[in-house]
Each structure stands twice: as C-alpha cells, then as structure tokens.
Length: 223
Length: 401
Ligand SMILES: Nc1ncnc2c1ncn2[C@@H]1O[C@H](COP(=O)(O)OP(=O)(O)OP(=O)(O)O)[C@@H](O)[C@H]1O
Ligand SMILES: [Mg+2]
Image (tube, rainbow over all chains, first blue to last red; front, side, top):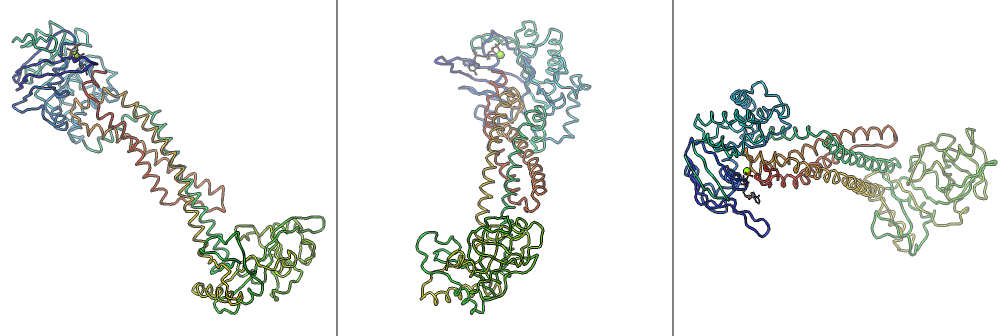
C-alpha cells in the first residue's frame, strides 16, 4: 500500500540542521498493524505526520497505492487526508465548544454532506465506540477514555484505509489505555492499516510489526 | 463545505465567547448608527435649507450691484462697485413684460424704541411688492402701502418678535415708534414664521425704501428682488434685467443677476458635500470597529491553533480554513451593521421628536453605504487573521508549540 523511499526531513534550528527523518525507507502493506517506538526526539511523530501528509519531506518519494504524493498540491493533499487518513492524537484534539456529535460531524461537513445524512453516520459511529448516549455531551463532560473514543469515531467516520495514532494512550490511565488499544485493534481486524506510536513497550509488542527509530533512522524493523 | 455549514460553524465560536462577540457588535453598531444619524441630520439640513428658499416664493431673481464673473457664486466683496443700483433702476425694470413684481431692498441697523423699551434691530427698506415676492404673511394691520417707492411715508411693519418685545400683546396698529432719529407709525405686524436669506424677519422692521435711504444716507440699494411672470419667463426676465440696467448705466454690465433656483442648487450642492463629509467622519468609527475585529480575531486565531491544526488534519484545505475565519468576521460585521441600522433609525426618530421643525430623514444611500462599508470592513480586517489561520503549519499547531 505504502512505499517510502529515502525520505529526509530536516529542520533548521539556528545554525544547526536537525535530521528528524534521515533516509527512511519503508514498505507498509494494507492491513498491517505497526507500532513505532524509540526515544524522544527520534522522529516518530515526524514519520507519522509525513505518512498523513501533514508534513512534506525535503527529499525522497512517497508512493501511496502506487501514486506519488510528494508532488501534490495543497488542495489535493487536504483531500487525501480527508479520504484516506484517520488521525488519533495523544491529547484527543476535540473541539471544546462542540458536542461529541458536533465533533464527529466535522469531517463530513468538509465533504459538503447534507445534515440529515450526517446525523445518521454520526449516530452509527458513536454507537460503534459505545457512546451513542453521549452524543450531546461536550468534551469536558466526558472522561479521557471517552474523549479518545470520540476521537477514534471521528477519525473513522470517513472510513479511511489508514489510521495513524500518535501515542493514543499517553494521556490515559492503564485501564482506559487498554480499552483504546483494543478498540484500535478491532478496527485493524476489519482490514484497516494501523500505525501506532507508543512509548509503552508492552503495547508496542502487541503489534504484528515493530519499528524502532533512533535519530531519524529506522534501526530495527521486525514482524 | 456548504455555506450554511460554514456560517453555522462560525456561529458556534461567536457564541462560545459572548462578551467578546458583544463588544465587537457594539463597536460596529455604534459606527453604523452614527453614520445613519449624522447623514440623516445632514440630509435634514439640506431639505430644511432648500425648503426655506422655496418658501421665499418661486421664479425669483436677485439683482446685486457689482459684477461677478460666475453666476451663482458670491458677488465681489472687494473692488470697485462702479455704479449705484437705485430706486429708479428698480422702477425701470417694470417695463419688461417678463417681470411681474419688483421690490428694492436696502438694509441697515438701527435702534427701535417705544415708550421705555428699545431694541437694536435690522431695518429693511422696501416697497409694497416685497410682500408678494417673499410671500410674507401679515397677521395684524397691513403691509407697506402701494405708493411710489420714491416717496417715503413714515410707516413701518414690525416683525413678530420685535412686536412682542415692544408692545407685549397690546394692539400696536396706529402707535408710533422711534427708529433711529425718526418717528414711524406702525401699520402692520408680520406672522411668526417669516424668514428670508437666512435671517429672521421676526427680529426686523420694514419701512419704505425711500425712508431707509434717508435714514442710512445711502443711495445704492442692497438688492432688487424680481419675480418673473412665470417660470418659463425667468430666462427672458434675466436678459431684460441686464439689458435695461445696461441701458441705464451707459452700456456697463455692472450688476449680478442670480436666479433663485441656481442659488438653491448651490446650497443643495454644499449641503450634499457636507453630508458626505459628515458620513465620512462617522465612517472612521467603522474603521475603529474593524481594527477591533482584527485584534479580537488575531487573539482568537492564536487561541484556536490546535483547532485549526485539527481541521487541517481532518482534510480542510487552506482555502476552507480561510473561508471559516472570514465568515466569522463577516457575521460579526454584518450583524453589527444591522443592529446599528436599527439604532440609527430609532435615533433618527428620536431626533425628529426632539426637532419637530427639522425634516430628519434617513437617506437610502447612507443605508446602502453603511452596509457596504461594514461588509468591506469585515472582509478587509478579517482577512489578515483569516490568512494567519489558513497559513498555520498543522504539525506545529497540533503539537501546541
Ligand atoms: N517544527 C520543528 N522545528 C524544529 N525541529 C523540529 C520540529 N519538529 C520536530 N523537530 C525536531 O525533529 C526531531 C524529531 O521530532 P519528533 O517530534 O518526530 O520526535 P518524537 O520521536 O515524536 O519524540 P517524542 O517521543 O518526544 O514525541 C526532534 O529533534 C525535534 O526537535
Ligand atoms: Mg512525538
């Protein structure tokens, strides 16, 4: 599904150049469950942002379903994110003034879908994470685990083939974290490609494939 | 994204910060309301002044001694005024069939006294025909007699205010008053709404022009007022005036003839410009409101960085983020504008109650202009924050850096 070739991403900090990604080459097959581990600053988030087209490499090539993505216009990249990528963040990133349902509607609104159709999909998505009775709750009225489940439902509402989660359990207690990981694994079992960045060794080892990064390089990749 | 969804999304932010939203709406509303109220005052002033001129009567010509190059402008204030404009000139004008009425006019100031009361007032020397030309209303007695203007009988007509000050509410007809060092018999009193040339006839006294000449020791008239026989005859009347005066003044064109309608046009023009200027000054408050919008939106953008990053992660393009933030600015400015229109209309109504004689009127163009300026203000000042939001790097925004 994905072929990364010699991806480099540099940041200029003062006089120094930080190599956040240093000639990363990676193949990802559809349906993979991959965990990305490594010390802080090793480039895990940068890799995930690159895969989600939130960031662009300085050099290298990114093929997604045999299509080169590094040359896409800004508008096309936005469309790609909308249709192909679901993002899960450590801090959930729910819009605080919108209800759970309102947050779930956002991606659908961006496609120009009519409200009646949106409501049906939102209700389905909330039910799939067990929060159908929380549709009208604001994020602050939900627990951390519930907020992250809303975020997962939002990431999945467009039915993207690729789910990118950057430390999804980082802000949660062990129990809620477990639940979140299980929710993500269930999604993976339905055929969705899942890439999870984590610091938790135990969680990392549940994945079918583990990638170790150090200083922007993939140093270990085992299935 | 559908327009309705865009507006609805913007609306949720505005509702999330009610104090901030109310502040901007207030600023915008005050700006628009001041444009509406000030322009309606300006428009009212214009209607009032032109109305005053019209109430003078119609198809009038004013003849001034001295020559002015541009008709409709002011007569030469300095320089030589070559030849006097005399009573005989005025009488001669009656030869023209295009001219129906002629009244000489001479102005001066003098103390007027009766018994122990004395006032310094304007003295108008004129003739019987002044009443028709200026459509003066006489509420007691009668106006100046229709006699030869060269004869100055010792009679006078009092303005309403002067009458009350000298006589209270007593009947003044047949009483004697002293004007300067001469004695005059009161034969009439003017109504209380008589104004002309921007001054108040109610604080004046009218005497025969020949008497005024003697009193002020002047031979030249201040004006000759001419009423043409019809509106169509105005042009011919003007030509005749110039021709007759030229003949009498040995071939010199040494008078200025102003058509009343040209004068109205000039005042109309001046007051229109004044209204625009006032509107422009009021519009500055709209710019202040615009700057407020910009500031508040800039703060809002920096507070909502994570949200902007999220929208981009969810697939919003730069253009869509721009539209979201612009629509917020537009909602604010337009809502403020509509509230301001409401306040403006109420304010104009209140002014009308307070100034019943003054025709306060909200001009249509000022409504359109105010709304247009609001729209432009919202767009212009919303653009900078919206662009800042749209250009935000989603990675940095999401990381909360
Ligand atoms: N916008 C940026 N400007 C400058 N340097 C950056 C920027 N983003 C990332 N970096 C640098 O790139 C390197 C990789 O960062 P990245 O966030 O990918 O690390 P990470 O593996 O996700 O770390 P953590 O486990 O702490 O989240 C770091 O050295 C970081 O300082
Ligand atoms: Mg990271």
